Image 1 (tube, rainbow, N blue to C red):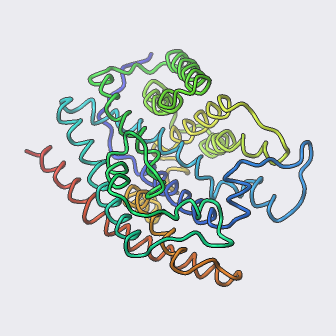
Image 2: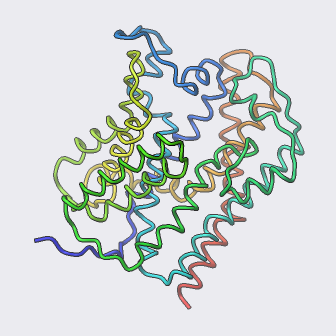
Image 3: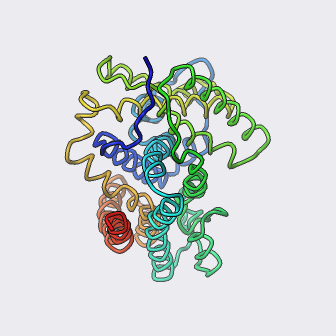
Amino acid sequence: MSRPATLHLDRRPGLDGLRGIAALIVVLHHLLLTIPWFADRVGFGQLGPKGRFNLSIHNLFEYTPLHVFYGGTEAVMIFFVLSSYVLINPVSRESIFSYARNRLLRLYAPIFIAVTMASGLVLLFPRKAQAGGSWWLKSHAIKFTFASYFKNIWVVDGNDWLDSSLWTMRYEIVFSLLVVVFAKFVFKKSFSIFAIVVIAISTLIWIGITYNLDLLGWLPVFVAGSALHWFPEDRSRFPYLRFTSGLLLLFFPWYLAGFGYTVSPTLDRIIMTLGAVMIVDICRQPNNGVTALLSRRLPKTLGKYSYSLYLIHVPVLTTVWFVMGSPLGKLALILRFIISLSCISICTQIVYQLGEKPSLRWIHSRKNN
């Protein structure tokens, strides 16, 4: 017999770990986008030869399960689904005013610090497109303007190359406000309701992509995360198999590309959304092997700093590359990777200490009063 779901969820360490791993994957993705061949083939979604798989280092790196370690777009899908699943808890427990105030502060305080730091880096270290650099890196050869600064802080109208990672925050902020429609909503555990919602989500994605309605193409991905509250939790059945199946769905469109095939953008996004939903579903459940792995110290630590890491890593990474110039060999490339990761770690701490931590402390203090 189905029953209404309680929305007062305990902290789910598996979800924290998943968020941390996803953030690390995005960082690795952008590190590799500094390499011209990777940026050209992965960034432009180039296909392999149709009907066959050429055995080469590049193809093995791009079109095999190794792609899971640097699938930036796929990791973003995880962020969207995970964020919307978790948001149902506070929006159901707080007044709409308190929720909106706390959520916007939670999002915008670190954005302000990250964009200010990004602007400072551009001013301190002028950028000039370098010969041999990837198209992605050359796109970041920008000059500071106040118009760009305020655009990236506001972000709801989009962003630019000052901090290119912020493209996702537009959808995050909009959905964070729209999710109040679920305030005090009772989720009844039901496969049939979940299936109907999935069909509705797929339809909305199709409409959004077909008619070039940007928000409508992405916001249903968030709704899919919220819809998990209708999906019954199963704490015991084949967690590794289900997690692997989710990964296969999430990355399936990309593996097809290795054999020269592609699916429609609509089907691509729907398949990836379903894969992300399956992964988050496993990781929200306690007492399974996948959750245990993601609850270890390293993933949880990454999860703690994941938001600050996500916001600041691209400005820091690109600054290192512009300062040091294009690498002239494999050792120079590895050195730049090491220096980039070190600088990203330091700047992540700055964003966290100046923006994220104070906002979280203030939010918690208001809740306790």
